[in-house]
Image 1 (cartoon, rainbow, N blue to C red):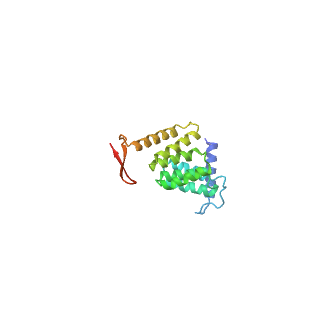
Image 2: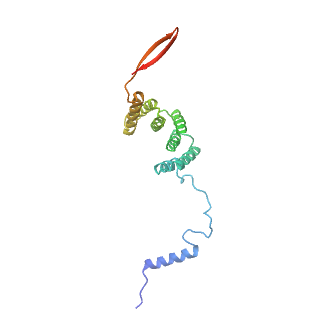
Image 3: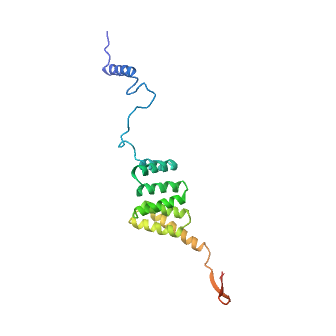
Amino acid sequence: MIQRPVPGAVLALLLLAACNQAGGLGASNSPFPPAGRLDPGEAIDGLTVGHRLMDAGQYELALKAYLRAGAERGMTVDVLSAIGSANLKLGRLGQAEDILRRAIEVDERFVPAWNNLGVVLMERGQYGEAGEVFRRAYALDAARSEEIRQNLRLALAKRDEAEYDGEEASELRLFRRGPGEYLLLTTP
């Protein structure tokens, strides 16, 4: 008895034969990538790539992606804020502060830039200014962000801790040492 081939098997054999003759589906015999141009609409935005890299902990690569985004779309508040955030994660606090302040100059209502500036100021030990920056971010955000609220609380606590340093306040006394000469002393 003669068996007839299954239609799917015949189709598979024909496809394999076509692939062998053409060098594979869509493949060429050249070792080089296909020629042509990428459609700019197909490319992923540098800002998106940078955000993904930040999530993956690849801060240096994220910074490069953000800089590329800045070259492509201009130094918008989004790009500046992202560059500042990457610098913050890399420990480049001075650069981060400068760039985040530039972002705020571009758009003084951009909450992420205010929040990230507050984080930079906290890292630099400037708790009073950080508290004011977080207060501004919290107000601009209409008090919706729990993270900004927690940052504000921490900044105020650190500011108060730095002011009092866990000790009782000393009393200041002014002593006259001569004509027009005074000495300021503290007493516990």
